[in-house]
Image (cartoon, rainbow, N blue to C red):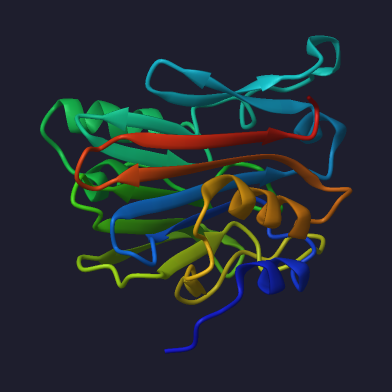
Length: 236
């Protein structure tokens, strides 16, 4: 199993778009997850993360510059019954609604597909962290850019390895149209992620300066369920 340096991977990928990292601390005591957004258009870059009662949401930084909120304003993180949902779109609310009606993460996402933003057909990426630290990552994407078929992949990690995480993003690289993420989630070395705030800052520094917008990182104690979190907004 090849462990990737997260900062090196991000340095080598100028436009991953939006990304989710979920894993386990080196001492095996906590779950760690991180979500970031990037943008190429003024509308996408005009955002910040802010806390809500059950997670975070995106908000326009300058409301006068907001042109289309449909795919950029949503709740990236929600805590539902002890589980944590993190996604790159309004499927967060779909998953939360399904949970509250006794259904599963997978069931919820089978009702959704990639974003309707031709020609990119941006994938919907989603993650679920359970109270015991086990987690699932998912990507819903077009079949090689063909919108006639939605491909739904689920990656389940029932016994996470200490000091290891998994990363998935919307895009492989920059381009026009943007190429969707391919393959399994990258395996990330989290052995050096000893303190949340320095780790979040290292990741933020590794993201492309022109395109990065916001980053959220969280550490969940698996015994007490206490949470530490960090928000970094370019538009502060």
